[in-house]
Length: 287
Image (cartoon, rainbow, N blue to C red; front, side, top):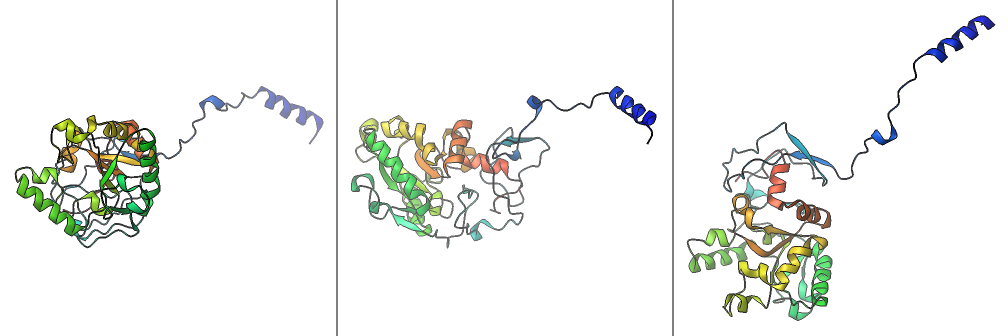
């Protein structure tokens, strides 16, 4: 190439418009733990959808800072569901249950890890995954001067039959709202615990009272509402959840879902059932 041509090409390069590169401040970095989920529906679904019901597809999508496991496109009958051992996000409501034969693995007696005064009886068992955070939670509550008691943990199918029948005898008109029907209780997962406060009997004027919505007015209830998510526990049945779960307000019933999701639910004001049903494209099972 001769000298004249070289100089001409250099001249053209110098006169060419400058290539535009994005400003560093305009670069969008992917946020951690982002999953695309369906936007909230304007109204809650019926707690007893038909077998053909499917959460309506919508082009409107929102992002949440918590990832969900991939939904199984094969929907089976609810009474055949046997959740995987590591599945902490099983949807259980008055409509969506699990197999009567399901028994979680790794159940441990809580009285082996907590003081006698903090556990109602040696029969209270939970899955291994929540023992350590539950022990820390109880320890921190007792350090704060509180006196929580864990009244219930894992409850098998046949135990739930007995519980439900008792409520039918005591309050037949509301048994289905007060107690989950057998096969439709989070207690069967081994991930749910019921707390008790020694303040409750005096608060409601009944020395035999164990579970009451006034639990949220006790010192233990207030502490759990503010702090349970820090240990991975989420309130399953808040006031606004009945249309989704089929059960009334239970401020004493907490379910272990892990710190990350529990914190997200607490901070966003959502509850587990609503979050899971809105976030997955298919029903969890066929009622």
